[in-house]
Image 1 (spheres, rainbow, N blue to C red):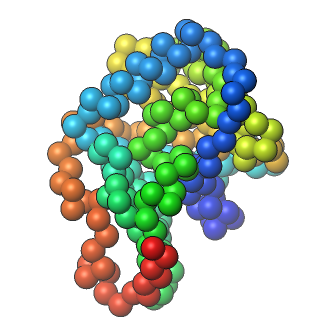
Image 2: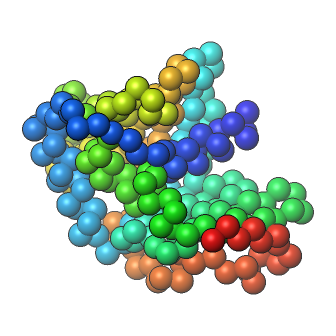
Length: 219
């Protein structure tokens, strides 16, 4: 189950975009999404811890794991148990550690430019999805606006995505992805620093820090 959940976590950041010209766009939802996206683009840097839980339709408690994410422009550094992904805007390193085995796979970022990444999640609504404002709810005194995204094509791997955006700050607080097998994948920020000072080197993999490692260069 752990390996399945890890695959799903990575899938969150590797969902291929697809779309058609026909769309159903709710202007109220677009205003919320535009505000969220504009705020993100104005950030110095973002660093957050998160929890991700997968519900398979059988286990009501779900399977939860924790991770960390740092984002700066089109760069990101994702840290999960036994796995890290670095993207400096030009190159992507996918590092995996299992026992004494260490491996890093290297790709050009341009080869994956059509995929959803941590740095593009704030603009995913602009291509391949319809959207509507579902409503508002209050949690711990915070008003959240719920946005539903639905894929424009039935062949998309994830047909429905729910986003919760804090109304007063335009911060993305959580989102949920539903797959075509009845599974539900919930991602929630636990602590967020929207003024993080992140050097460019933080997004570049340094093999010297990891000792003996197998390198698979696909560039």
